Amino acid sequence: MVAKKFFQRLKGILFSPKSEWTVIADEPIYDVQDVMRDYAFPILVSSVLVALVGVGITLKAVWASMAAFAVWLVALSLTTNVVNGVALRFEATADRLQSTKLVVYGSTPMWIAWAISTWLPATVGWAMNIVGVGYGIALCVLGLSSVMKPSPHKQVGYAVVVSISMVVIHGVGALLRSGAEKLFLSR
Image (cartoon, rainbow, N blue to C red; front, side, top):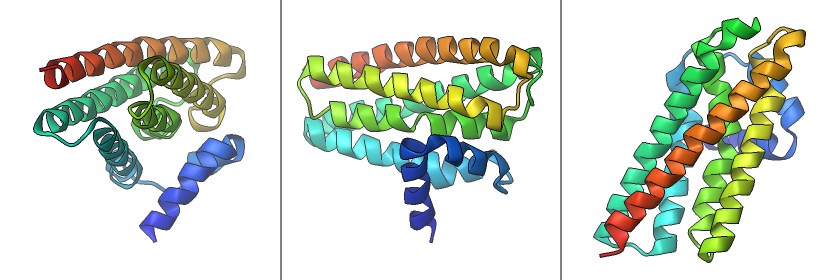
């Protein structure tokens, strides 16, 4: 049952995000751990495993994958804190659970793009990651009104702040993941 719901959410957020955000905003999830356990961890672990197979399973690759997993979790936490932390400035709902839902589900294309990019030549992989981040930002911006409920006249400003924070945080995360890959895989 959990797997079926996971794949329905994955499909919904990627292919019909507008209606999926409405469902997400109103669904009865009671705490952040539910979102992390039932969605973020499975997709992150899957992405890390796909990436691990893409670079070849060695001890060094396992270390690089664990570092990437940690960087993704830190980026997720930082982005969630920014979205929640600035919510009141945009007359939005300051709710840790809602901001977690927005960032976790909105990050889906980033995680998928990263996993796939490890199987591709470097330049194509970077392009794939940029597309993933762009679509992730677009998903979060689309979900802001449903999930965080900002004041209509402050929604654009909130979207800009969320977008910039995602670019900066995930850009630094990409550099850290790249550094971990070089550290562990280039020897």
